[in-house]
Amino acid sequence: MRLYINIFLSLSVLLALVVSGCGDVHSSYIAVEGEALGTFVQLKCETSVEPAVIESIIEDVDAEAKASMSIFDESSLLSRINNNQTDSLDIHIANNIALAQRFSELSNGAYDITIRPLTEAWGFGRSVAEQRVNVDSLLEFVGCDKLRVEEGRIVKGDSRVQIDLNSIAKGYVVDLVAERLEALGIANYMVNIGGEIRCKGYNGRGERWSIGIETPYDGNMAMDSFEKIIYVEDQAVATSGNYRRFYLDAEGNKVVHTIDPRTGYSVVSDLLSATVVAPTCAEADAAATMFMAMGATEEALRLAELCAESYGWKYYFIYADGEGYRIESSAEYR
Image 1 (spheres, rainbow, N blue to C red):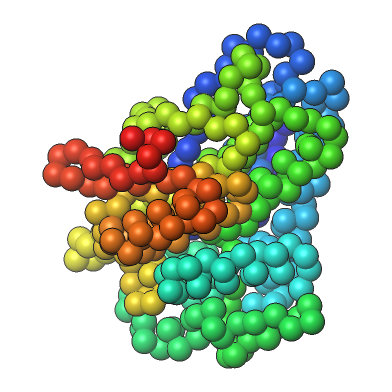
Image 2: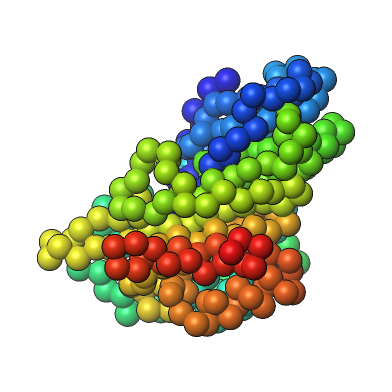
């Protein structure tokens, strides 16, 4: 299967990879690989259905996501909302806005889906970076407080507000695929779309799924160096980091893709990557981005612990520390 539907590229570089589960001993497990959402698909599950059935699930969800949430397709519902051609919502956008507003509140505004004007201006959207970014001007129409939903319709406090769901939608799509697998009665599976992962049950060896958290060195594209292996049964995993998507400006300053919507500038931080394990992949996806936006702060660590206690999340943060790394994590990963 090769799915070349290029929907949206994630603003968060999501870096967890499944590193085991190979060499399955049960013949009832199948593997499906391909491309979707502009990235790779890796899926394993225990089922008696033909692989073509699983492929069609991915294709259908992919098509739904493109029609709904793509910022690269001008005909998508989200693009038309951003261009003020409609104020109607579908279930996908409505669900993501509701979850995003929760994370905005949790982080005191460090997570924000109205950040698109800033990511475009800094060159992390469809446009090249502006020579001089007028941050103060852009911040006038950035902020979740300028966005609300009333009776299934979007209400903008400023017509220039634009929504970007890239930091949550890929995880949401993983959840949609997982839900459709479960509707077929599939109880053991792993869905991985571009490093956004959701697992249930066990792999073909009868073990929990093992996930590798990558070593966060600049420009790492090999995906073959892991700082930590974690084990997942009925949870989702997402990692956000700044060591793949960045560029050097004319003065040689490193400009990373994680933008703080409160300041309008790239986050300058020793936090290199944030991995979150949560019940759903949409939660894990948004939370990982949220923590990267909060940076290497005590506030972020306190929130991570609070969310672990309140929601059952787990976290694994990797910081730069001289020539090496420093780790802050949930007790299970120490």
